Image 1 (tube, rainbow, N blue to C red):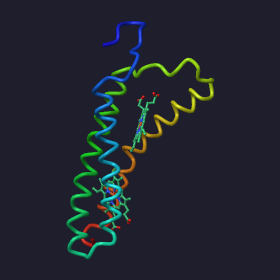
Image 2 (image 1 turned 90 degrees about the horizontal axis):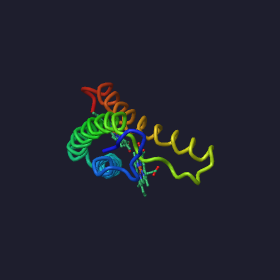
Image 3 (image 1 turned 120 degrees about the vertical axis):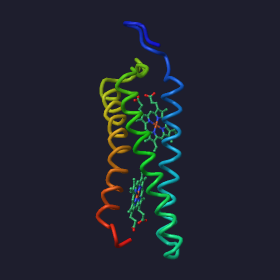
Image 4 (image 1 turned 90 degrees about the vertical axis):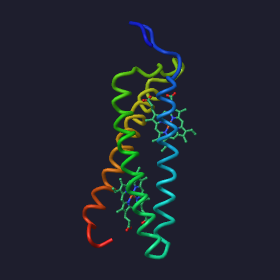
Length: 118
Ligand code: HEM
Ligand code: HEM
């Protein structure tokens, strides 16, 4: 764990595990929704049920990850980065956190809007 003033050299095991578990689940859920779209209706309903369950799991894991990130300091960016590069990296990281939460929320909204139809 970090002591005051010093910063870890690399991401913790927990941060890396969450990063990759979530990345793989998002990729699978994306492909799943795509494949389901072309599947016959009965299969599509089943696949979309799994899609929604997995999407909610991704949402829960992403919220957990956001809390983790707010509590644990990540390693410092490389000192060789120019100011604008470091700023761009930070903005990109936060945009990813936003997307990881906004995308399943949007899916949930779509699901609720289509209740009884799909
Ligand atoms: C859905 C896919 C992905 C999402 C949502 C995602 C999200 C993120 C986020 C939010 C961070 C910042 C962590 C922090 O400092 O708080 C990060 C860092 C990082 N990600 Fe990903 N990521 C994804 C896929 C990938 C893939 C496919 C790769 C590699 C090919 C990758 C490589 C990295 C690396 C190397 C870092 C560390 C950056 C640094 O050292 O500053 N990520 N990712
Ligand atoms: C990270 C999480 C998620 C990803 C990456 C994702 C991805 C996608 C993609 C790519 C589609 C478009 C399929 C197509 O028409 O080709 C889609 C559709 C959809 N998703 Fe998600 N989704 C996620 C989470 C969720 C969640 C949490 C729910 C509901 C609780 C959900 C419900 C839906 C619904 C209802 C559709 C529309 C299916 C249709 O066209 O009839 N998604 N999703």
